[in-house]
Length: 320
Image 1: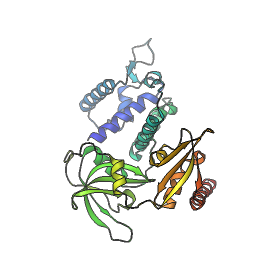
Image 2 (image 1 turned 30 degrees about the horizontal axis):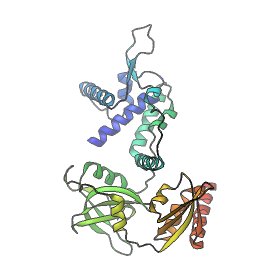
Image 3 (image 1 turned 90 degrees about the vertical axis):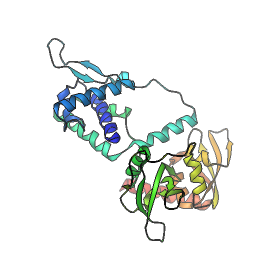
Image 4 (image 1 turned 45 degrees about the vertical axis):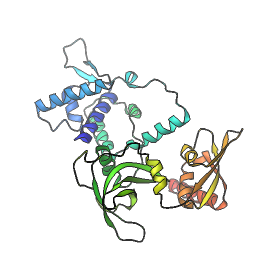
């Protein structure tokens, strides 16, 4: 229920933000997912609650009509200039955290509902401003089917069950209390309490081979206080470092690599030199390649060649 409500509020914000005109209640009911299946009274109550919640979190909804010379039905909109945040100045580490958090917003179901709302507005002849979506644009790339249900389970503290296959082994059923989902060495992982083994475990999402089942209700457990997912991942990571990369990293870039660096030298030419331990050459190569021209491998040679191979592959796909 909480997730559906969050999606409805987000789609209401998007509809009111991208429309160039005031939207009437009837039009809002048609285009916003979660409203059009409600009865008249239920819709009115839900819409009033949603407006009040948005106002409570600082989103101003303007009420007006298309033609003030006539007694038109009142409509609603969100003015972009009032919705935009003032310019923020962040320290590099703060910007890295905000950037990482922003990556966790691209849910396929939300994107599909947003597209549906825009299509309905356009079909009704209402001018829309798609560029306004950059204010609330999702930015996550997570292809694993397990990502969304596990993310939801983390948010609601709901235990889950799924089949999990380690390399060269048959899938096994695991029951877990999810504590968090994190990106670790270029892969998505779930960290939580494994009920069967009565221990903290980390699960790579790409190795979840079944649908994720909920085994209890929301709020069925508490995440231990002061839980640090990244520190836990370091402790549970199955692969010990097998080498150290010497990297040239452009100033202001590569913060994920900087956090893992054991040595860091500041240069005077706009670049820093980092020494970063890594466990797998190809995983590290993909990690480095993701930063494009902002990171250059100085050593070892085998890692440099692996990065070039990854980049050539990406370039080939782009041309194709």
